[in-house]
Image (cartoon, rainbow, N blue to C red; front, side):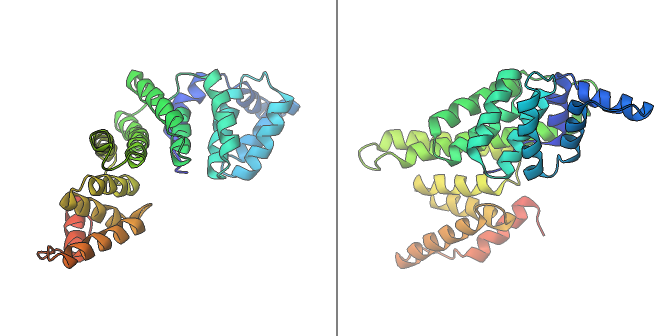
Length: 282
């Protein structure tokens, strides 16, 4: 599963929507040398283990069991969702993510995160519904006055890329499930939708290698050989998720072209050089 989210969105969209009574208590009591409540102590441990997902989820489960009515529950549920995503525990990630959405229904990060997980698990109906939910929320967001405009746009673009990439993958899977001959028209429509979504994802983040790879695959299934090779090449030179698969697909396409005397000067090195130039890579 691909991790979605950022510190900025986390702080603005989650912490800004909940009363962090335990954090306030921690600050007040640490300044006055007063003993902290058991709930405050556990919350402090959670904060200290934010970057240790295994320990965090252990503490989060304990906190939820002991203090289910805590005003800090959105923070706990959000962070537990992300921690379980890092740990590749989809069942627990979904459990905490859905609990978070009940508490904070207007946050786009968690539905985007769950949509990605469902798409990778080939549960495309759930993935599509949650991805569209996330997009609707993103479109309704207004930048908080205290947040820098450039940072806000950068982080929202990362989220938009993830959501549209998920929708692209949803339509790619729908197309792949259709018969190439019997359902040609419907199949092409789904491929066109996947291409549009991947293009939107790449417009938001032109360094997303998995979107380039899957866009290249969509072009290949559409029999658009030249576009497929160009797009695959960008996935390869970026070197992230899908880059190895993209190179393999390029080799297979070029081999078939050579066998049919259609190579016409095409080569992997040529496409990779062009891709680096287009992306501004050295």
